Length: 151
Image (cartoon, rainbow, N blue to C red; front, side, top):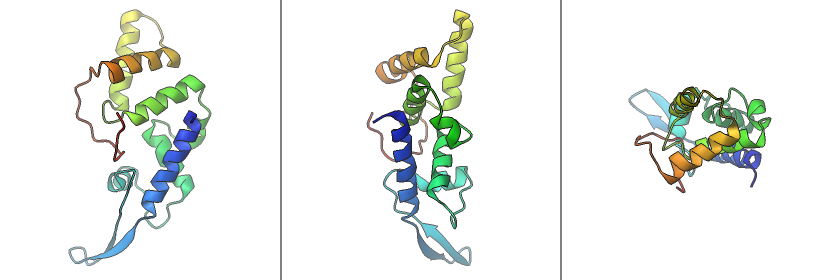
């Protein structure tokens, strides 16, 4: 599956999770709220962190949220990336439990400063695979929006 299809699937999964909503009465707030039975995402965290309108959440809005989680301001930006940039975005998305975007960007900035050279997306993919996946050098405990990780 190519990276664009991967992100499309993630948006569909987020939308599927959102559609599991059921209204429940909450006496403490004197009204109702929604409860979810998600399979793919920590939907409550997504709703809070991305100010999701629970009354009006479409697949298009799910795509926007996925782009935001991947570090981009909109879906159109995400799907127009080069192949290497998409691969890096996918790796960061899949391994968000190991390193967050800010930490990765700081790590790369330090590497670029030390080497006095710009590291393109292709080189960053190689570095990511080595230091995050193979060597697992980051000793972070990071909350992830994903419920399950295959890594």
